[in-house]
Image (cartoon, rainbow, N blue to C red; front, side):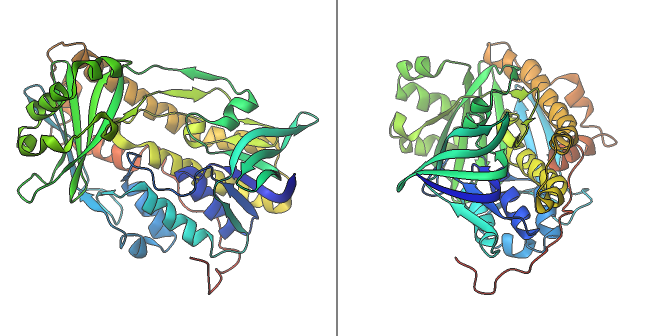
Length: 411
């Protein structure tokens, strides 16, 4: 068995893991990021990069380069709830440079962070490295056991950070307890081509017993058909023709391309969960992002909450990690910093689930709640856009760049 030693080992190369790894390496901390897949190329992952994340890119001096990546711009989000059309976010008033949401394939976002992380000598990204167990000594987590194509690898570190998503191995191995807040829906993701005459708007449509969201990704629509929790098999038994018909009824302008939904293999199921760890840490270990709090897809805020967690963690942990001493009080500080924004955001998602999505999926005639109609008034309409775009307690880059990047950084 091979063993290596580093200062911080991050398990999972998603938005939280890659951002944290990049920021710590930039701050002079030796870091290993262990990602179990061979690359980041997996479709139907969240791709909404909100203004809060774009503002962090500006603070890092990377925004102009970042916006050269393929993306589309969303300046307003609307919902059709029965006969009511409500705007749930417009961004012209935001106090940031980018007053829009960028829809960007997540693999491009992650590759961008990986490439910039590799420009620092202290950054070590290991693909095809899957965490399978934690290593503990005297009640403290001191490392992680991984599987690689070359055999087993032990990564020992002063701190292990679980960023491995809602099905986190780190979280399970650590025995951390969570509270499940439930979700009335699952989501079936699929693609349809986009034609020049189609709407530019990203929108959602809620009818009796059904709901669909269509994200404009320039040359195609990324579609989310929302179904009652656990009903995927029932939808499939009804047949693909009925599924196509429902999609066409919800969005008549795609009637001419329903044949692009060729089989169930082209439709991916996302099992929705909303939960949160009671405690995000143990001696030698911390969880952030979905590993600490699984988010509903409502609002597309998952990436941005994960990135905010990573920035806060880097701000708090960089100096203690450089000193080689991360106390339990320091880990607790990360949770204190991020728990309120997480609770608030999850509470908003649960209100939306209980008042709009759940009743609609039960077949009740949907209508916009009074509070959503009230937020259409000119004096109040900025509130939902700001909450959606910037979140609660937005983080800012506080970690210094200790060592300049290498000139001939690996690609």
